[in-house]
Length: 160
Image (cartoon, rainbow, N blue to C red):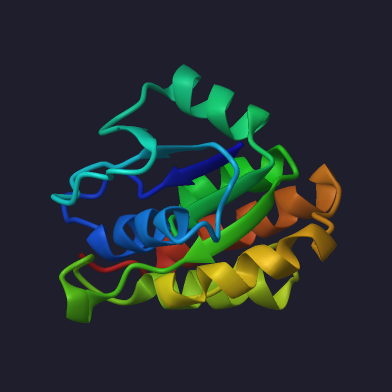
């Protein structure tokens, strides 16, 4: 199962959801998909979804998924690392009205550099899915170090 999460930010992330729908429609994704769509306006047509999940339901979906496609939010990345999930990280961008700034680019770059996820834009998901099986998430201790780095980055650099 593929779990997709756009987070709970006030702005939409329609680009990601539309691309997943397109890939399913064109038979580029055959696995079952469940998505947490947040404040996105786009309503997926080809996979199951729910706007918001409680923490327990969110954790359950991350634990059981084989692939976690997520925005570059610190909480989602941290959860994926905690459960050693193969992740595709797609940063939200200010120019598309997906966030107030582009801090997710830096978070995505950091996680990609550590080879803990494949980072791409929505149009790169198909290629990322072809590479994801080779990704070997590191053990929890390493993930905790990265989580701490991300939290420190957010504390020192995030500006609303």
